[in-house]
Figure 1: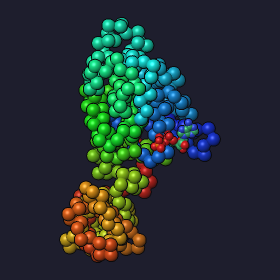
Figure 2: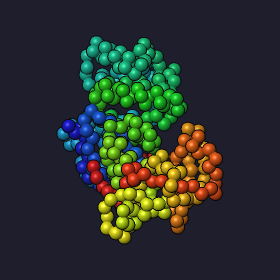
Figure 3: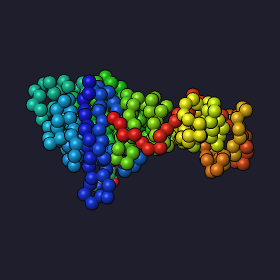
Figure 4: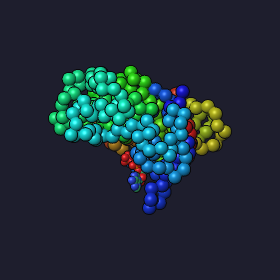
Length: 348
Ligand SMILES: Nc1ncnc2c1ncn2[C@@H]1O[C@H](COP(=O)(O)OP(=O)(O)OP(=O)(O)O)[C@@H](O)[C@H]1O
């Protein structure tokens, strides 16, 4: 079942030279979390604002639960937007904040109290009802905001980088809690993030947005394994290298890859993730141009051919002794290489 259907949404902000969103069509499956990633300024927040009804699109329709809501006011849609600032009502207690949405919808008082207590329990804040927002830590305030958002059982919960303001340890805890809560409550969610790892971990589905368009949608596993276009592959951190079809494979500056198909002599682009590149063995050689120890991994940059570069992520132990200027054998395992188009596909 589909909870949210965006059909050919376009939006150009006043005075802007180009659209912030350009004919975006996207369907969000009910009860699942879709994560939306893309570079800064690609239109992610604008898209959330259009769904929430905070700004009107120039063209296209938004349907929630089968109902077209494009012309409805934000409070009549059933979409709730939550950002990195919890934006709690400071003059109300925690319980008052969580109850706010319920009260507006005319739920009886006794039922409100029970629901509020249940929700505070769910976000691991039992007994916090009487507290004032000013007395809460950042993580606690964010959990109250989440309880307030879930209280109204939104048709879609829109999360705009909700973990960005939290420190790394707390971010991990919040991610796990939010993931669990969204699953438990069967909430349909659209979560915007800059962080690829977060997008992969949080999403049942992953959508990549580039220049105002949805460039790729799928399960996180599929999108990472087969990014579809060179632009999506690069955005997700993969190497993109040029190849030429020869008998028995595709020739690249870093050696031949045993891929089938394509007519002899055809040129194409190949994507391979840094962690899939192997250094060693019998492969052709490349020159090390950079070695960077990053704690859990060592990132090695290589050059070959006419200015082609390749990034490999190695276990730090395996990378010991790797120095700039060294000539090392490279292997590109065919099962980890995909052919990508140079123009992103517009799909939903
Ligand atoms: N209220 C606004 N008025 C005018 N222009 C805006 C407004 N909001 C966003 N824009 C512009 O629209 C474009 C898309 O911005 P948007 O905030 O949607 O991108 P984003 O992908 O969410 O970026 P970030 O990841 O940095 O938050 C940008 O060029 C931005 O400057």
